[in-house]
Amino acid sequence: MKKDLIFLGIETSCDETAAAVIKKTKAGKVKILSNIVSSQEKIHKKFGGVVPELAARTHAEKIDHIIKKAISKSKCSFKQLDGVASTAGPGLLVCLMVGMTAGKTIANFYNKPFYGINHLEGHALTMGLIRPIKFPYLLLLISGGHSQFLSVNGIGKYKRLGTTIDDALGEAFDKTAKILGIKFPGGPMIEVYAKKGDPQTYNLPKPILYRSGCNLSFAGLKTAVLNLSKKIKTKKDKYNLASSFQNTINEILKVKCKKAFDMFLNDHKNLKNINFVVSGGVASNQSIRKNLKTISLEAKFNIDFPPIGLCTDNAAMIALAGILNYQAGKKSNIDISSQPRWPLDEKAPFMKGAGLIL
Image (cartoon, rainbow, N blue to C red):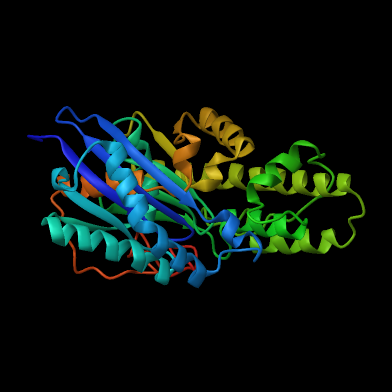
């Protein structure tokens, strides 16, 4: 690389309006010059979930201000940018269109390359914001909309090893929280409740646990929680159910990770340093982090998590993905449309969890 590269990233796939400016130096060091995220949590709280039209309207109201704030904090100008990257999908179509329109407008006006980025690729490459990426590595992406094991073999080179066949893990956390009467967004509060309960109180189902491969399923677990919730009488009962739910998730991940490790190693038999990256919003859960660290240590995989602030949706990961696609020789794709359905591994068989929000 002959020069430093500076990219603006824009993220509006769901209910965060985000913009960031990332610099990658000639020496390969990545610097986050700004990373602005405006959450819509308070707006959607009274509805118990994200309302797409309301989210899009809020994005439209905030996007100009958030982008200008990101540019100002970075101490760069629009003219100094080497490119612009916006999340093109997967996500809520009406929300994606806001960020895509903003990004394309800036790229057109200043004659800069534009990249429509797969949101999942952003999560897959997030560790590059912290240290140089070494391919290949195994990725577990766990968020509100996605739960997948992927072999990350290079920029644009992704092989799906397993995915949820129904609900995403983050969705299971959020729905369980709602069942327990925790206000939106309740997923992170499950961990708080779990610390106060006994994880052995309830024996919950572990769907498709011993089926071959590392596909995941959480719908049956969620239904079991719903049925048990009807018998709950005290706050302590809620704590115990939350603790049992989280413990069951950890047991499922323990078995499925081992299967994913075997599948990854089968594809990379001569690999010496084996890296395992866990990203997405659910990767913020400390109990899950502790569990996955133990599993990885036993299997001799080097595990990495992004910092908590970079696990959830942000534009820094989108800007970085733009830079890495640019460096990989990918052409500017300003004609790309917003794509609510966009699996990272487009050759993999169709499944709900393969990069979709339905």
